[in-house]
Length: 125
Image 1: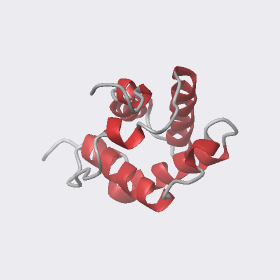
Image 2 (image 1 turned 30 degrees about the horizontal axis):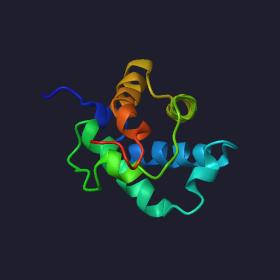
Image 3 (image 1 turned 120 degrees about the vertical axis):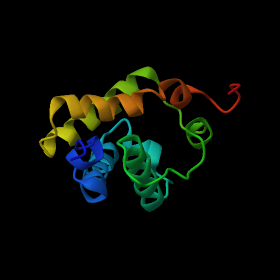
């Protein structure tokens, strides 16, 4: 029998979507990060983030959105905002009792793009 994947342990697409929804709810409620999403298409963001995490966790879905750097070039992220978002992601995973090692894997998949998230529109990619 095949070993259970991170995707399976997270509850497949439905489980990952629940974590993503919780995460974006927390981001939107945050007084520092929430305003960055004022004009965002939240339905699209939730879908693409779900696809991204599903793919990163070994699921069959594929992320078909723009490259991370391109998609976030207009967002004025700072290292402290990235750290705050990571804390909110950990809280979202904890709300669904995701095991620590699995939470680390999910956060690692997102944190791997920190340089792209911090890049401005004029930065070379």
